[in-house]
Every structure is written in C-alpha cells, then in structure tokens.
Image (cartoon, rainbow, N blue to C red; front, side):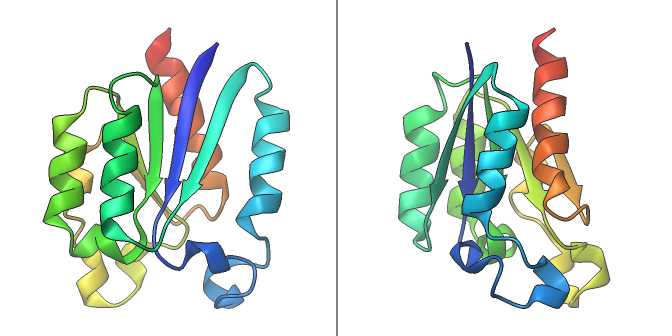
Amino acid sequence: MMKIQIINGPNLNLLGVREPGIYGNQGFDEYIKELRAMYSILEIDYFQSNVEGELINKLHEVGFTYDGIVINAGGYTHTSVAIADAIAAIKTPVIEVHISNIYAREEYRHVSLTGKNCKGVLTGFGMDGYRLAIESLLKQQV
C-alpha cells in the first residue's frame, strides 16, 4: 500500500475558523477524512505542528520510507532555510501546497524558500490542492 504523509505547519490547526475568507470554513480534521475515503487504496498519515523543529523531525522520520509527502509549511515557507534543507536531504518526493494563492497576497509571501526543493508547488486551489498533490504523487508512481 502506498504511503503518503501530509504535513501542515503553523496556524493550519485553525483551518475552519482562521480567516475563512482566505482559508475557507472547513477544518482539516474533517477534510482528511474525505481524502482518506476518496483514496482508500492509500495510507494517508497526517501531522500538524506550529513548531519548525517538529516539522523538520517529521520530514526526517518519513523522508526515506514513505512514497510521497504533501507539505503546507505555512509561514515557514517564506522564512525557513532549515525546512528547505530538510526537504533537499530526503529521498521521498515532496509536493508543496498552499490553500491561498501566495502570489495574490502580501509581497513577502511571493517567495517560497522550500518550493525549489519540491517536485512541484500548488497554490490557490483551496483545500483541493492537497487532492491535486496526491494525484501528482500517484502519477509519479506509475
């Protein structure tokens, strides 16, 4: 069974209540159930942390044994050389996801330090970006 790890960074534990005009009204706990039902042939694990080092530890933990990683590093996308280095150091392909279109937001969000080390970046598709990332990882396995 193909194993996918979804990693969400800071403040994404507040999805559904945080700035619904930008991030929508659905919480991730509800959405992950939909993804798992949609992709019952996969093992989809979920991890969220507001702490940079915990995100790096999770990347190291799964980055050599899982078939794919979907990461939304939140604000760390634009600031964390350490997370970018962790992505570069692992073997598992990583797809970066952003719920909002980072290029339609504040200028500092236009730069992704982590994206250059990922197989691809999806931005602005709402929660559906996670599904699109999983689809991309499935196609890479064929």
